[in-house]
Amino acid sequence: MQIIKAIWDVFQNQILGMSWLKDIIGNGLLATGLDFSTRLGASIHFFIYATLKIMILLSVLIFLISYIQSYFPPERTKKILGKYKGIKANIMGALLGTVTPFCSCSSIPLFIGFTNAGLPIGITFSFLISSPLVDLGALILLMSVFGPEIAIAYVIVGLILAVVGGVLIDKMELADQVEIFETSCCSVPTDSAELCKKERVIYAKEQVVATVNKVWIYVIVGVGIGAVIHNWIPQKIIESILGSGNVLAVMLATIVGIPIYADIFGTIPIAEALFARGVEVGTILSFMMAVTALSLPSIIMLKRVVKPKLLYVFVGIIAIGIIVIGYTFNALGFLFV
Image (cartoon, rainbow, N blue to C red; front, side, top):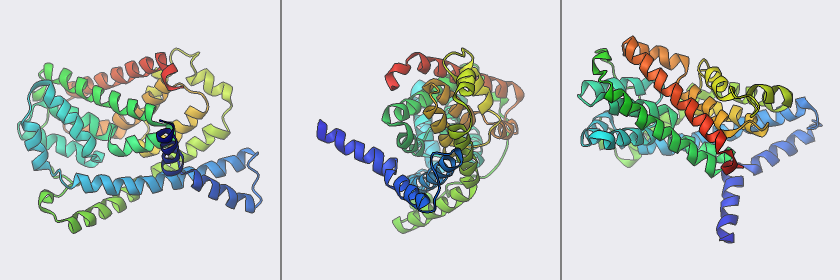
C-alpha cells in the first residue's frame, strides 16, 4: 500500500502538478534577482508557472480526448442514445457528454440535431449539461490542482446534476419549447467513424491548435485573477465574502460565476487561488459550475434555440442544483481536508 501511495504521490506532484516545472521557473526567476517574498515576485512566479502548466496539460489532454472524440461522430452518438429509455437514457446522455467534450459552439447545435432526430428532450438536456461541465480533461486538470478526491467528486456531482436536470425537464413535457433551428456541427466530422489512425491523429492535432487558439486568452485571464487573489487580496476580505462565516457564500459564488465567460481551463487557476486562501470546497465547486454551465454567453446562445419558458426552467434547475451541491459539499468539507 505504501508503494502505491508513493507512486501516486510522484504522479500527482511531478506529472499532474508539474513540481519540476515550478522549480525550474523558480530557479530561473531567482537568477534574475526576483524576490519571491514580495507580492509582485510571488505573483509573477504564480502567473508563469500556472499558465505554462495549464497550457501543457491542456494540449496533451485535448489531443487524447479529441482522438477518442473522433470515434463519436454525431450520427453514431444519436444511435447510441436512441437505444436507451428512461433514466438509463439520461445517464447515457450525461456520460456521452463527458467522452465527447464539445465546445459551446458545437454542443448546442448537436443538442438541436439530437432533438430534431427525435431523441427525448430530457436526454438531450442531460447531454447539454454534462458536455461543458464535466469531461476527462476536467478530471485530470482538477486532479493536478486539488487531488483525486475533489476531482472525482466534481465529476460525480456534475453527472448527477446532468441526469437529474434532464429527468426533470423531460417530466415537464417541454419538447414544444425547442425552436426548429437547422445548423451544422463544427466539432466532429460526420464521417469520422471511418477515419484511419493517421487521420485521427491529424484531427486531434487540429483540435489542439483550434482549442488553444480559442481558450488561451481565458487561461491567461483566469491565471491573472488567480494571482491577484493569491497574493494581493487580504485574507480577511476573502473570508468575509466567501468564507465559512458567510452563509450566503455559495449563492454569491454562483451569481459571480454566471457573467464570467470561460471554461474549465480558465476557472481552475481562480479555484486554486481560492482553495489556497481557505475557501470551502463547495463554494469553489459552485463557482466553477456556474461559470461552465451557466455562463451568460452560453445562455444567450441557448436563447436562440429554445423558448423563454424552457430557458427559465433550464437556468433555474441548474442554478438550484449548483447551490444545493455547494452547501452539501461545505457540510461534508471534512472529507476533503
